[in-house]
Amino acid sequence: MTMNIVIIAGSNRKASTGTRLTEYAERLMKQAGHQVALFDLYRTPLPFYSPDESQAEHAGLKQLKQLMAATDAIVLASPEYHGSVSGVLKNALDHLGSEYFSGKPVLSVSSSGGAVGVSSLQHMQTIVRNLHGINCPEWISIGGAQRRFFEAGQDSYEVGQEIDDRIHRVLRSFLELAARLRGKGHSAAETTL
Image 1 (cartoon, one colour):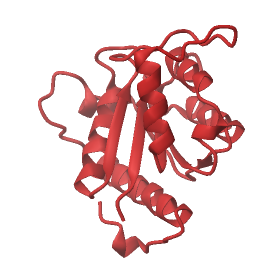
Image 2 (spheres, one colour; image 1 turned 90 degrees about the vertical axis):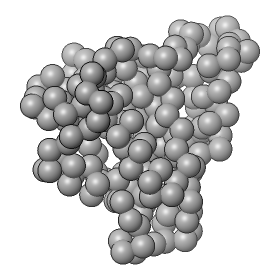
Image 3 (tube, rainbow, N blue to C red; image 1 turned 180 degrees about the vertical axis):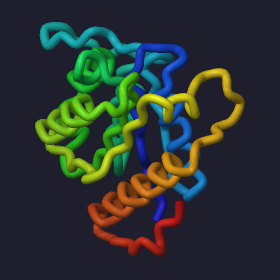
């Protein structure tokens, strides 16, 4: 079953390892036959959210809302800044209401300068719950030496076997959850990645 998946890369850094990780996940999910759109908040910055101002005509915001309205599943990615998600990701999520998340599976992904970005992952999952999305029970977090596999400047991703196995396993779990939520559950054998 082909699904539409939106990835929101929530970094405001050109050489973001988290964005490179989402590009790798995008490639894997496309290879598995899914339609995947990567919305990079560095390349397409959004205006600051203000409930007092209409920003409906902002081209980037219109594009994001169109993608989110048509998606079956969502991947949120953020660096860990001061124990939480990036400001640009939080701003993007403030622009989106529960109508874009309700009943949809969401995978949280983090890149941290330390060992893992657990605080940002927990904050993303809290936000998803408040938007009525369904958190994937697993997440992907890279930190420390794992980040070198995703550093900008490399022409290809030579991912270490342990992190590559984890990425594949978590993406399989996420896609299986998405398939079940669409009412057409697949067994692990039917979801190749």
